[in-house]
Length: 264
Image 1 (tube, rainbow, N blue to C red):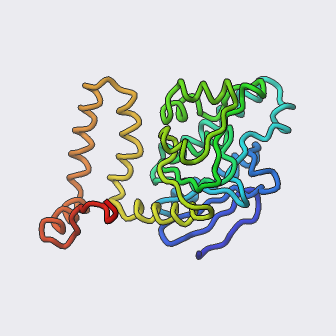
Image 2 (cartoon, rainbow, N blue to C red):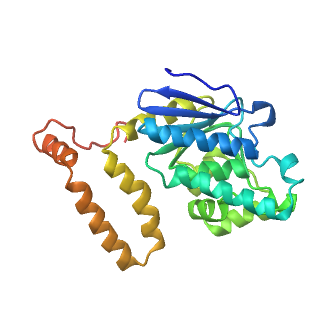
Image 3 (cartoon, one colour):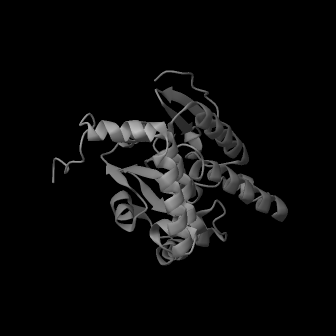
C-alpha cells in the first residue's frame, strides 16, 4: 500500500483508488470514543476527497466492540444526546456521501461497531466475526443510527430480539439475516473488502453517487414519488459522456457481457 499511516486512533492508507481506514485501538477492541469519532470523520472526509472508494476495518482481532462505556457513563444527559447526534452526522458522511464504503469485519462487531458497519454500503465478514446488540443488558439504547440502519438491514423484530435477549450471531447467520453481504475464511475479509472496493471504484462516478444517495431516499418515499425520482436519475446518469462511452464500448463488443458465475 502506498501513502502514510497515521498510527493514532484511526489509521489511513491509500491502495490505488481506494482509501483504507482502520480503527486503531486494538487494546480496547477498537471501542469508539468521542476522539475516535472525530478522527474517523477526518479520515472519511479525506477519503471522499482523494479516492473513488474506501474500506473501513479494525486493527487486531476485532472490528469494533462498540461504545467506549467508560467515557459514556460519565457524560451528562445533554452531552450524551449531543454525542449521539455527532455519531449520526459522521456515519451519514459514510452512508450518504460521494464514494462507496466497504467494511471488513472480524471478531467483535458489537453495539456501536455494528452501527458503524451498517453505515457502510457493503459488509464483508470473516468466519471469526460475531454480532451483538447488548444495549438491553447495559441499560441503554442504540445511539449511532442502529434503530434505522440495522433495522432496515435485518428487520425490526430481529433487531429487537438481539437487543432484548443479548443474542450473539456468527457471520453465516448474519449473512442469512441480510446484515452481511459476503463471508470469507478467517483473516481474508480485508483483502476481499479491498477487492470489492476496487471494483466499485471502477464504476462511473455519477452512477455510484446515484446509487448511494437516490436508493435510500427512494426507500423513504411513496412508490409513485420513488418511481419519479428513479426516472430522473436514470436520465441524468445516461446523459453523461462517460455513460455514452461505456455503452458504446458494450455495443462495439469492447466491454464484457454479464455471464453466469463460474461455480453456478
